[in-house]
Length: 475
Ligand code: AMP
Ligand code: MG
Image (cartoon, rainbow, N blue to C red; front, top):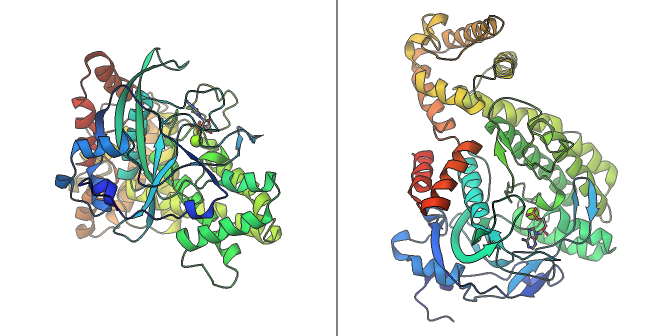
């Protein structure tokens, strides 16, 4: 028993993945010259049932900067398909599972580190995280969470005072260590490794673990394994649909970045799309556009398909294949659901939904002067009761510069939207204003915005603009 008053050190950590033994290596954390807490996520503390007022910054630093040990630190073993090529050389190269603990929702969560030092999987790399990388992960996860996407959160970011050299940042650049709060760090690639080493017994053991902890409603039921795969297909399709509706490009959809729980995590060169451009590609090194915005559903499908290889050591491939064919329907349903919300509607008939979404995408594809997320913010900010009276009232005061060819697309959109509004009872219109606020945060983290926030940190060590932007996101 710990006698510390630090609540993090007194949480009831469970030896979940630790007790399985075959999927990790025990590692130690790096020691740093500096420990400055730059980010603490009090919303996550609440999920853990901790009162933020009782957790000091020093508690964060002790646990997630100095890495006071509670349980052994576990670097997880995994492989993965990276840009289509199988890579058996990876694994947790700069992170480990610090501990696993129940939230007050009864679910098991991981504290996973990023930038905590070298491990047997670091290869030639330094095991470190740039401070900017940490800031970007905070932004991605908080923005997605605000939009209702199931995502890991960033629990803490501690600046660690080292100089790092990176090809994609002006170097030397500052260092940090992050602790991520996530549903699980078991990836598709965790299973892929077991196929590579030919261990059907370990695959069985790992799938049982996944079922018991992350799919408990399926555990012990008839056909539990096939039901798991089908539900995973649904979860991943839903997640991908939500990224698309949010205008989010993850950028590195390798199988080692795909969680077995269908949660979004591991944010590298991600971007929110500035405009609706299907070919938008976020990673500068993704020359072929494999993980472009519009390719994300195909990439997720491909990853789910590949996951059948390890799983087929213990379950029937044909059955999995027929589950995978449902991806498209799951995807479409989740996409329509979120897009409707972003457009202010709780529900519409199928043909109405199709018409509205296609009119919206057509407008946003053809009129690049209207930003993708800016469009939804504008809708939120200008939506009024009088839109129901006249189609021309809709976006009457817009300042978009439209060409003669583009104008008819806006006209068409107005007519479609107006028709839907007149079919809504007046009482519904009031709900729509609330719905629009809920679905469309006014803070949009396009790249120039993120760079601007980072500049303030890099040049003046001024963190307030970042904190203010996140506060606006959540308001
Ligand atoms: P990622 O692109 O962050 O998903 O990482 C892919 C693989 O490279 C994982 O095995 C990481 O652990 C490893 N990796 C990435 N950056 C570093 C680093 N700075 N030091 C050690 N390993 C790293
Ligand atoms: Mg990764």
